[in-house]
Image (tube, rainbow, N blue to C red; front, side, top):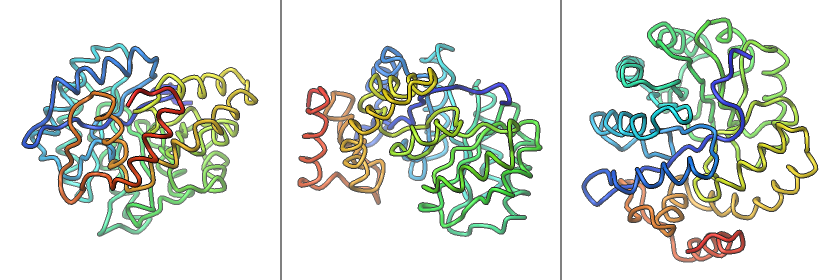
Length: 295
């Protein structure tokens, strides 16, 4: 491992909002809840944080606020990726200056890129960054798959430290591990695959699920890290219905509904995202109650 940024469970946090601004009071309370629940790292301004529709100046403010609020208690990883390399470089400079412990950079979406283009894109970002870089592969959302051989080439860069792998393919994750060895850490980007991926050697998960049940999610990854895969597997199965409910509509719509119902801000989203449909909301809340979450 390249001095792992974190091991275990990291929450890709939602961004609480008022109708016109960021709800910093709710964000602060939510960060304290996450840390008190034992979470191992915070990812701010990722997909779950609605980074695609939050203005750059507000993104920077949210990242800075999160870093100041967390105050070094756990690593803070800032999402800086877009489909414009120049914009990513700008975001990365700001996140580094703010004191982020690492950055998370998604593959370019819509315009996509060739594999050679991806190497050039991520290399430029890693050259600019002063902190470790986590690649983020989520082809279901971006239409762009970061292939294992490409990851292996990027892993040679001293600041490319990890990949959040959310292709949904265990075979692809295994191939990354086979090609890269200890040159790069792998994090699961699929909550439903946390235990299988950690059983293969993944360092942990960057999670949507842990927005809602952080303590139980941490218990699952702690069991994996302790080699107790029987306990971990039981927790994975127990949490699966909630995991499915959190992806019954496009992320982060269900996560925002859940966190709002838990008392961390109103259920406001930025268009084109809209509030959760009632039938799915009821199923989500039912699963939360089964796990002891008050809604």
